[in-house]
Image (cartoon, rainbow, N blue to C red; front, side, top):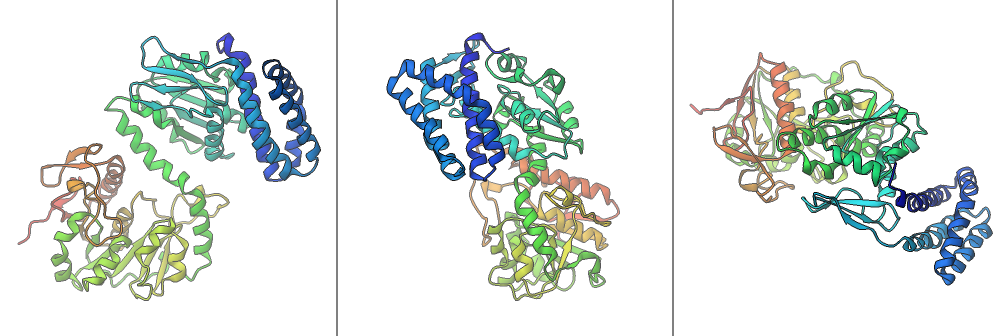
Length: 507
């Protein structure tokens, strides 16, 4: 249980979180939850009001007046919500001042516990100079995360990183106790802190399991279960060992993207279904040659432009959207264009060249305007993860595996269209000199080399990349390994080594 001196503080702090929820329900005109929750906690509000009045007479009077305003708002939920959010909540937060300010380090001096404005303690990692929870409202932050990730179809949730237990508690609350929660923590001290200074014990023991283990495998196996949701407390990753951190980050990147873009992908999916796109299975791919070139936007693309010009019409050129306008400007017209990006700003890939006749192959949840505006032939690629998007229950017999990067999707196109030799152009999966993309592409930027990861280059040198590109490379290597009957050439002399490919040596 939490330290005794925190009991009263946390009961009042919990009331602040409840009032925030009532304000939310008022905004969405949910009078049922407004009335039932407010009435259930009115007595607690009056108790805080009396305590506050003993400390600050004027503040106590303002508190009473505010409660009267809430009552007077009656059925006007807009006014009621505003009164709670902008008048009552500030008074509740101000009343927490009667408990004083808590600011103390642990014995080892590597964590700082301190009061937040909402009353709940937050924790700062002094070793990495970073907060693990919000310094203003850690419980409110946890509720927002829980609402963001919660899916009633999940039977359990796995969390890597205990923190002070706020997320586990909010998941328990939001699910009405229906989901089982597994907390995986590498540092036994953090679990102790979550019990002494946090709210971990607010979750009933029969609804939660806490596993202390530095090995990431138990968490990864648990989180990979199709019936289990997951979350990683990213600020705690800084404390993972150098061997474990990239493994967890790759997992996070691989599986969190769909969640981050969930709303966008749902909008895109339904719009694309109503467009004039045909399914990829309807496409006549008989003209695709046995030699195919997959063109991505890595910096080494600039070194392979002559190769593309020489082979246009001789080999099937499959380009990703990022390079489309660059190639057209150089009079290199690809045979196929592949786009998977689900977000609006990527539309610039075809903006101004929508009248081109290059067949466009679109991921089913690509940004809707690609399908709406492009005037050439358009084909949709069904994805295995389409059911992960809200309100989509359709299944597709020949769904393609979802890829982290459009380049892997383009590689899948070449493989499925029965190419026998595939040349990878501009597939660097690294940042030579910190450069992200080829010249004259919209996303070309210069990165700092400080946070990049050294990996083996395709020419035996050391090149620098990041966790995202490492994840993409593994996807590509797995796809190549699953299709060993094809010869793969890596044309890059600047990028990361891709297992299963050969370096191209010009004759």
